[in-house]
Image 1: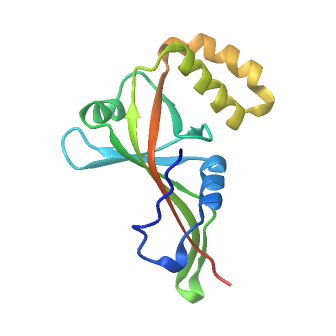
Image 2: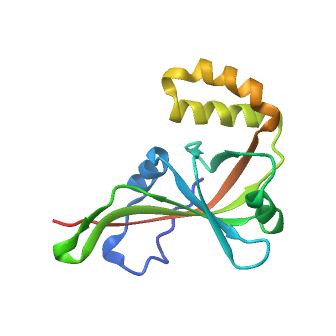
Length: 162
């Protein structure tokens, strides 16, 4: 069961309810994956993703690179999706909505789960071209890593401006 937890959000007047947070997670165009850098410090990278509607987020990437080295060092990650924003210069503020996910990244998924994740990604990003996308995925499958983020908790925050 998905663990929605807004307890750590300081501004109680800006809580994003669970239903709205889940909608943002489902519909968001991209997210930022933040992790511990292999040399220490932090590393964040914007990525395309898909949420399975339950307790997993899937990402695709190349089978090697900095992101994977970071995850090999430490699987604990934060994943942030920002929805609609609007700056109000005259009011010196910004309207926004965001979701922050605490998760554990998993590599080395089985072939069946990798294909399932690719279908989910195609359904989100290219729904009219899924068949063509699957054909394309067949050609590059061996060169594609799929990461599973196992959701530990989700929190959401928003600011509405009238």
